[in-house]
Length: 122
Image (cartoon, rainbow, N blue to C red; front, side, top):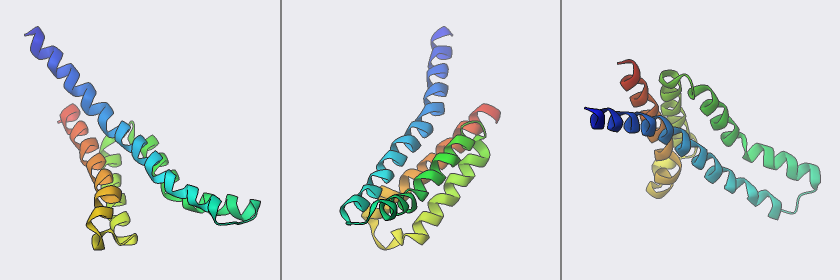
């Protein structure tokens, strides 16, 4: 009985932290693409502006993660919608490798947030 309870606690903690850590790693990965603005030869203010523009998806995802941390149901659906928006806006459906790197992690995070919500409240 104690072993089953211990496994359930580990599973619950794992399901709680995996989507959050996945999104944090994904945000870092996505933010690395913004660093290419430093090689464009812009002036200081143009570089700052270009960096900010390139970081908008990462900022949106960070804000969404902040909200989803305590509101898994809404956050899970929001990550699924963001995954769909990324897929359409960045034309990820045209390149399977790009879809795997950019779209799939967001969909997985959304599903895991919803699964965590259902197991806690279901």
